[in-house]
Amino acid sequence: MTFILLQVAFILLIGACVATDDDAHAHVAKQYKKEDGHGKFSYGFDITNGIGAGEAGDEHQVNGEYHFISKEGLPVKVSYTADENGYHPHGDLLPTPPPTPEAILRALAYIDAHPKREEPRPVHHLAP
Image (cartoon, rainbow, N blue to C red; front, top):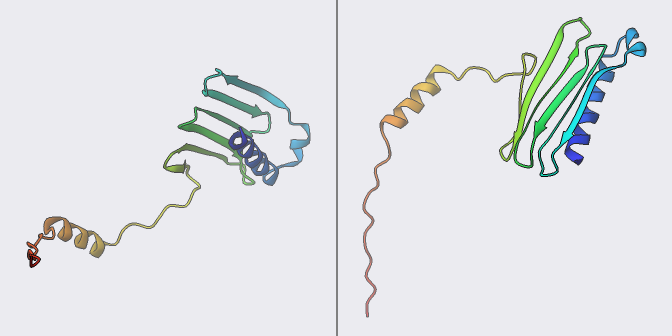
């Protein structure tokens, strides 16, 4: 539950950062919250100024998204998965790593093609 509250706070913080003059007149257009009593849940909301979010999951995995309108007037959407391996966001505005240099790709291919051979270890016998 704390995780959900932190996400809602984060989404509201994002919304506050991109607020416009018309936000004073914004209102909730849609909202829902469902819990099955066995750990599965879903919730979501949309506000008339373009801010919204939704999330569904259980104690093992959560899938969700949030969206808003940027200061430039462009729609921004981030989707994510959170599971035992961490938080995995996806979106056009998120930074991505640069491509792997060709020399590194060749080195990795060489390593794959030439695996290290295990040399037999000498056996040491202890004197009785």
